[in-house]
Amino acid sequence: MTILALLIPVSLGLGLLGLLAFLWTLRSGQYDDLEGAAHRVLLDDDGEPRAEPDTGPDTGPEPADSRD
Image (cartoon, rainbow, N blue to C red; front, top):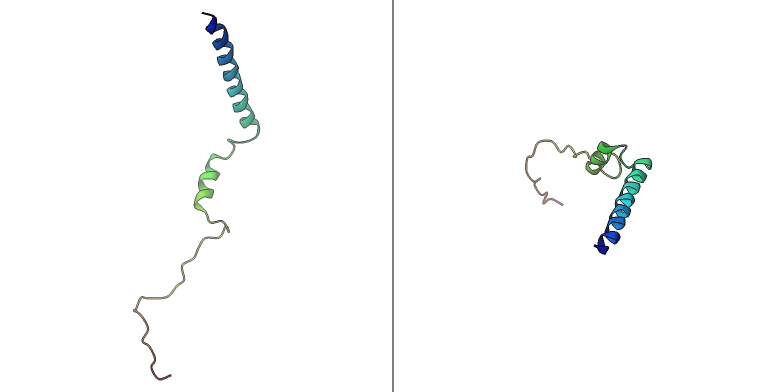
């Protein structure tokens, strides 16, 4: 029974600590932009989308010129 005298304050203290940590994250703006982080994962680091070079229709390799 004496263990409850120790475990109840410890559990209340941990709960209060968790609540304070959650309130701190709210005040620091952790949850302001939920979709922005998901979109930033998909973007390149330089911010510009990559463009594929336009090579035209695929006609195969070019013939080697043996007259050189």
